[in-house]
Amino acid sequence: MRFERKRGGRRQPELNMSSLPDLIFTVLFFFMIVTTMRSVPQKVGFQVPTGTELAKHKKQPSTLYLFIGRALKSQGTNDADDFAVQVDDKVVSLEDVASYVARYKEELLPDEQEEMVVVMKIDENAPMGMVTNVKQQLRKAGALKVHYAAVGRRNMREGEW
Amino acid sequence: MRLRRRKRRRVPGINTASIADISFTLLILFLVVTSMDDDKGLTRMLPPLSPENQEAVELKERDVLRIDIAKGDVVYVNDEKTPIGELRGRVKQFVDNPQDLPNLPEKHQKDIDLLGACGVTENHVIRIKSDGEANYGTYFKVQNEIVEAYRQLRDSLALTRFDRHYTQCTERQRDALRTYYPQKVSEDYSKEGGAP
Image (tube, rainbow over all chains, first blue to last red):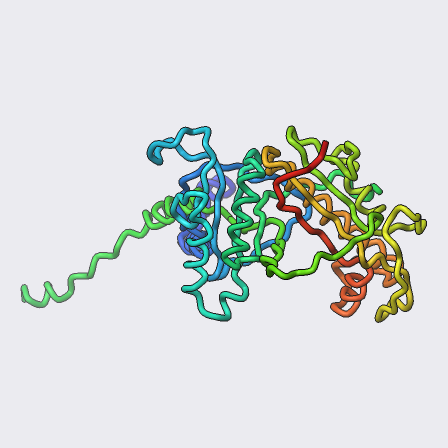
């Protein structure tokens, strides 16, 4: 009798859920801080090459983004097969790259100009003629530090001579 | 009497049960939107526009490694068709010249801090030239192989001389290693000529 009563009387303890929102908020804030919203609207589509010897580029105010990729259909009259150059958020014709980059550089502070980096995100299939042309224009504009963006790949052949 | 009872009324508590759901929704939104987008890649310096009156530097044939990227993404090293997989070995052989061969870069005696006197192929140049119709992907692979070749050379020297990897070396040791294997890559932007 006593045994039975004990069993029946015991309640399953409830899990205290009151700290759950706090936990979730913490994770939420972490992601809010880490997230970088895409700041540049994409007007060309590209797939950067893969590499093994990559170094990180730290984002700084003097970073200029340059993209070479296939022009997206939504951008006016271009065929989807044509490669186009986008500097920052504008599609720029090949001849205007130098003047655009030079103007961008002029607006920077003197010490920022020194360490200005052009991050180039170039499609794997882009013709080298175009890439070389853009590079020549960057030289003309005095933006000599470039960063070829790529995605990492595991090095499978490590240790081979 | 009625007034007093009114004063006693309790403020109703806010039901906070849904806060967890709301923040879950936000959390999932940020999880989806987040792209841990760090700009990885290879950093390179372009040569400054040369002034008109610049003297052409005479280079010895043995000091230059010519890499040509031709149409159809074929890579030629000194006019010899080379698969990209073998490129790194060629570059290492060229930069290091371990057997001091006469057809590879000349070694100059140099006194390097921490390393002492050693023969350095300090005049070597790797010259890349790419055809206008070659793909950027191939060019990037070539650049990647070259960077990797230098990194491996420096790393193995660091292991034998300093007993540690290049990444673990002090700045002074790295300077010495960089003097031993200076990175010299130039690019030929001229249009005419090129690989066969």
